[in-house]
Amino acid sequence: METPIKIALSKGRIFKEALPLLAHAGIEPLDDPETSRKLILDTNQDAIKLVVIRAADVPTYVRYGAADLGIAGKDVLMEHGGDDLYEPLDLKIACCRMMVAGPENYIYNNINNNDDNFAFAQTGKRLKIATKYIKSTQRYFAEKGIQVEIIKLYGSMELGPIVGLSDLIVDLVDTGNTLKANGLAPLEHITNISSRLIVNKASMKMKDKVVKHLINSMSDAVNKLTALTTK
Ligand code: AMP
Image (tube, rainbow, N blue to C red; front, side, top):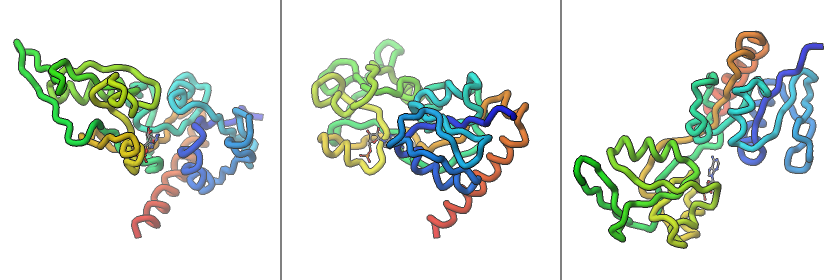
C-alpha cells in the first residue's frame, strides 16, 4: 500500500471551518479532535490522514515533508516566511484582520531624529508594541519608515497595555469583542487574514495526481461556498 497523504491542521476554528471543504473533496475525519486525544486522525479514505497540531507548527511539518499538505492561517505563514512551501489556494476560512490596537484614540508621535525616524509613545519614550507577530510587525512599521520596540509574547497580547508592558499591541481581530472587553480599540489595519492550503514541494512533484486532485476539489468547494455566502 502507498504511504497515506497527510494533511496537517490545527483544531478549533480552522478545523471546524475546513470540514465542509474537506467533505467536498470526499474527506471525512472519523474522530473529532475536540474529544479525541489522537494526533493522527483516520478519515473515511484509508489513503488520507489528518495530523492535528498547533497552528504555528503546520508550516514546519509541511516544509519538512512530515505532512504533504497543510491548512494554515496567513498570519502564521507570514511569520514562517513561506518561501519553502507552495501556497496554491486561499481557503477563505478563519477570516479576520491583523491590526495595531491600543487604548481608544491613542496617538503616537513620529519624531525624526538624525535620520532615524522613531515612534514615540505618549509617555515620551520609544513606542513599545507587544505581539506574537514579530516579522509582520517589523515589516509594517519599517514600511511606515519608523522604528518601534517589539516585545515578543505568546498570547493574551491585550494585557500588554493594561499592565504597562507595552503601549500598543499587534493582534488578530475578528468581532473586536476581545479588544473591547479589555478596554482597547482597533487603531490601524495591517492586513486581511484567511487560512491557506499549503503543499510540500516534493509532494507536489512526487504525488502530483492526488495532490492536484485535492487542490482542485478544495478550490471548487471554496468557490461554491463563497458563492452561497455572497448570495
Ligand atoms: P474577536 O474578539 O472576535 O475580535 O477575536 C479576537 C481573538 O481571537 C484574539 O485573541 C485573536 O488572536 C483570536 N482570533 C480571531 N480570529 C482569529 C483567527 N482567524 N485565527 C486565530 N485567532 C483568531
